[in-house]
Length: 132
Image (cartoon, rainbow, N blue to C red; front, side, top):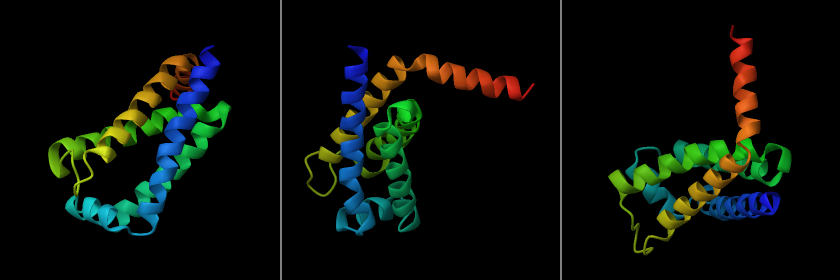
C-alpha cells in the first residue's frame, strides 16, 4: 500500500512541476513577473525550470524518488516563502493557484520523504562515514 501512495505522490508532484515548465521556459508574463519581482529574471527563472525538470525526472523513477522529494521539498519551501513574504499568495489574479500548487508539491514531497526515510537516512550515513 505504501508503494502505491508513494507512486501517486511522486507522479502528482512531477505532473505539477512539469506543467509549470512551459511557463518558465517560454518566458510567460506570469513567470517573468514573479522572477522579476524576486530580482532573479531571467537566470533564476531558467535555473528554477532546469532544477524542477531534474526533480520531476527523479520523482518519476522509483529508485530516485526520495532524492526528487528532498530536492522538491527544498525548492517548494523557497517558492512558498517567496509567495508569503515577497510576491503574495495571489499573483496577477491567479486566485492563489500557483501558491496552492507549491503547497501540494511540498506535501507530496513530505509524504515521499516519510515513506522512503530509510533510504535517505542510509545516504546521509554513507556521506557521514566518508567524511570521517
